[in-house]
Image (tube, rainbow, N blue to C red; front, side, top):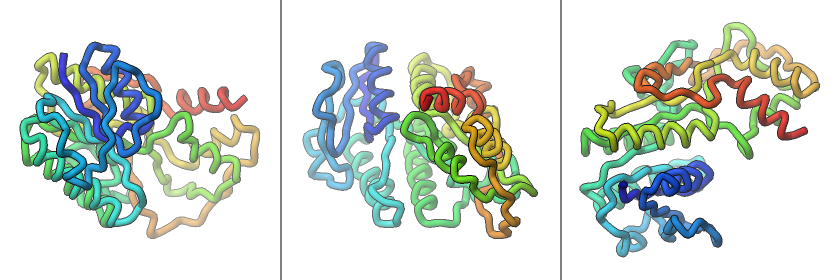
Length: 279
């Protein structure tokens, strides 16, 4: 079994910690404000990764580490604090550790509904996505064993933005189609634990995986379906937005070829469950 560090223990990181601990791994969670009550099988350390002093007493013999961070705000300063300063502090402290970084499909700037995969050009326009892309490259250049996983829009319990939006009869672009890509929170955890298992069993892994469900769908279709199930007013047609960005369809072919099967392969599977829970 492996000695594992999880940097950033929000909803996904903490659930992953529980899964890996149950599998017999030695798991440490690093979080600025650790939970007051947690599983006795998981050790939590309070630290701000943007401060090298906070990492002074951190063990250096972790064989595997997950980088699952959330910036304080959606601005350059907050993103630099974790994706630049924080990551560099961790790499200086743990130079021999193999890393698995959670990234985002926001690193793609394609806007015409194109299919994208791990080999597609990733040259984002905005500074926050550029900092994520920079962090990706730092890790991949450092060690060929390091892996980047690009998640599309994450949804699930307490991540119900589209449900709230659907109840407002929003204006949505209908033609040409504006696509939405997503992954259920449970599949985020599933993908990460699956990739770790593949690594530990000695399978050859790529350095980058795109993790999104099987069903990239037009936003109009998704909103219409949600409104029908929620028994609320359907969306209204929005005029074509010539400046609409990041309109793409995400391919999960590489991940599925490795053997991963999604627990929630379509938005209908995941949102039906969330709607049922509301009732």
